[in-house]
Image 1 (cartoon, helix red, strand yellow):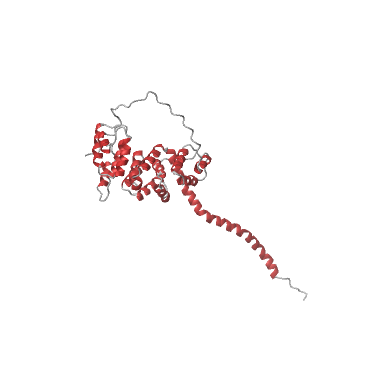
Image 2 (cartoon, one colour):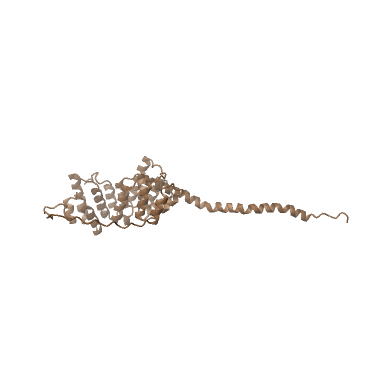
Length: 326
């Protein structure tokens, strides 16, 4: 059966499934479900194709994958009845009438939650990000050292700051990079994915590796937004690039929401911070030698002056005046 445009990348997934030792069925079922629930409504043909594809996979995947798909489709109003039956889902509608009480008491007003203490990162954000920073390494270090909630706060605040963002990646280069990154993710080729990301964003290899290998995934979201990667492609990258990360529904859903809310300006400001971090590290690398040279010159200058004054005195001491009268 030929896949419709509703499921882009299906041919590539089937090619991967034919590789020896690679069981692509759990990931394939997750991708088909994620793509299906992205649209509010589907035609009869699209729904029929979704039923044909997923009904064969539901009984062939593990319990964890089946539970994740069931959770996604349980809150989707357009889940086909056939798939709902296979997953044991209760229809969202029912012919049974529920008795309504004559009067529903109003709930008591909830007490205001206690004021939450600001974390150290939030305090630094409030005091530092409102003014022009002088060191990009501070922003980058603050971001990588923060928690998931604090990272989201940093990215939200960046778009309102007067910091200068990096220029957009040229459109032709960005399109080519997105294609290569998606193919590398499908093949679970982290090395080539990191190499292409660093070349596209003009980042050194060590920073690109730090972005890709970060366990939280927020730096990868910034990098993908900087190359203007579509949201659907980014979700597939999350699912395929690292199997241990893609199998976590919570992580994929959390980063997908962050990516949809992340502004291009925040991503480009963070890109500028990573590029500035390279200069800061280079400057710090050569700073000790320059400092030693300055100390050496400062130490030798007084000695040279005293040494220059001594020859005259020593000459006078070595050449005493003879007593001609004797």
